[in-house]
Length: 574
Ligand code: DON
Image (spheres, rainbow, N blue to C red):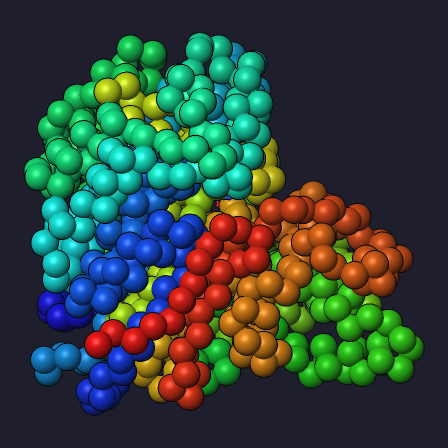
């Protein structure tokens, strides 16, 4: 990938943008970890034809808008974390692109409250007022403008073909669509057109989307202008305004994707590069990793004791993680929001001093009650993810979403794509949880043109100036803890890529009180021990779909979560 200077490389908090001044010999292996077979095929093909990681990401991103309609999207938004190897005299660097949705200009703080000040159920989740201004098309356009090497239109062709000629629907997709159809029934005061467009999602049959194919063709020819100022913009606004939606032509014309400084944290001789606000992910993951490292001696002695008394190691770890997560989600609820609107004390929140103080009250023996958990004191002031490494060592970690699977249930008539329901990620009322059960306060209240707080965490791990890992996942508020556990599984537990993504995960997020969610494979012994300690337990069949690429000692491996329909592959580019 050709490095085009002056991107928003990061100089975040003590870590320099310059990863390595030397150009290492170009490795030949490329790798992909993608959420479905169609995006995997296309990403591989683009890389084999000499495209770079961003080319492959753009092509796959548009394909997923066709073949993974519950989360791949045109009507949503996301984040992309990128790594460019040194080239043409430029040092290696990482960068971050924010193409998160924004609140429409007509949005306001109490948008989803009734006259008594109570939250109107599902208004921020289903239907015409649930959507933020979409960012995906602008995001892919920006990434391609800066780093792409293949013609834009050629990268959209595979998506156009799948939309026009159809693709074979998987059982997984049919089941998700059935679940969603059932879930939205009776949740909107006006009829939604989801069923009219997506009732044909039947496993084993061909599904064609002709209106979407036309939209993709316009975007291929006219670029992002079609979506934000052209025919697609008009179709989108017509649909919204015919049903009391909020998005206007001005909202679309003013939408910008933004290059931001990624969060960078040092951990066990590596740099963790991840998503800054408006995501909470990067800060939260660095907080978890650093507190874990600070408390490692205490953890080890608890593990030793458990061994002597026959307690399962995993139960000790699950409790330990829950204690760290309580502190992190309390900070998230209080401090985090769109940093273009509120001051987020990033430096302090990920500093060693702050985290040392924050971790001092962690007990390996007892549960810290959720009610007593305050944010730390600061003295100064159905998503989908894919990971790609090209044969030159450049990387893209991309997470994007409509929020719920299939978003708001609204399809833009004549344009054939679903709209997001990302407005639910704002704090609709202080202390009232969103669909993922997380609460927020002033920092994440609704404001015109503000971006809603996210947990999406496309993450890179750099070691000795090169990519060691590219990782991310969907899963709402569980994204943070899934990425955290995947990193720990590889770096500290020595697992392979596949073991690391398939290992059962646990999740705690401060509220509901003392609740640990777990993947079904967690053993009964661990569950019994956690119950004895006083935890409530909740089996969660779906807790992420991690896509991970690992490069260690020159060996590349890639893994897609066993729980999803993803495909990963390592291959040589001639
Ligand atoms: O930005 C966020 O954190 C959420 N809107 C992500 C939603 C998500 O991961 C849904 N996937 N299962």
